[in-house]
Image (tube, rainbow, N blue to C red; front, top):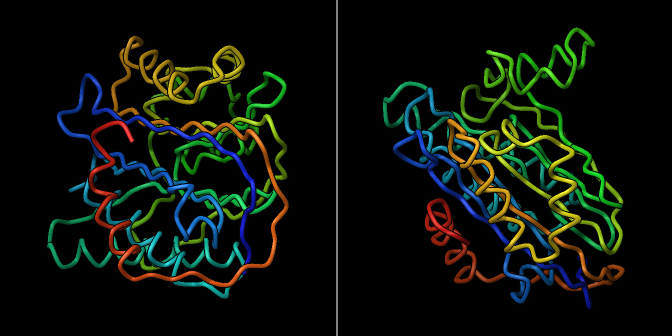
Length: 283
């Protein structure tokens, strides 16, 4: 097992129902940098956006995150990409089965998670929430949108600058909960001290350009202030969806070292209970 020593990361998140939706169907998760799970498994972050057009999107996003985290921490001996994949697949199955039990029709959610171990950020992604890397004042989107419009962009049939205004921007072609099986995008990025990351739901990125993310991140070094600036701008521009953001600032990175697996059923249960409280207020 691996652990992180002397790694310094500042993280912050905000989530709001927005000006149009009555309820918040987004969910976010920040790991506790001081607990034994972070020491054993690395820093773990995730964001999920329940599908507003389907039943119980808020339940779907919260359930997906709780299942993902429980699975990830329980798969102690697996490699990080495998843990991420199993976590996503179990989260998908959990949401699918919940919809069957509740007889509410379909339930769905996006889920984007990242695990920082040493100097490698491992990312698992399904849906149209996004992860941006900000380096040298430039923002680069690391994830692909699993939408009809995103597919048109990848086929070079639509210019990327047309995505935000396209009338089918939010039509997903892949998300958790609609089918028994899901194949997430799993990839990794080598990081360096000074990097910043922005995780956001489409209620945020649909009204803020990539260049603006880079500019705000270069001007604002405190993740708490950066999160607020991003969320406030999305609300000011009348986003028609829930708005959620996670900001990370990598102050110092250490190489990974050997460490024994740390498990605590009591702590894990506490983690799961905490998730439901992260959707409607500042984390």
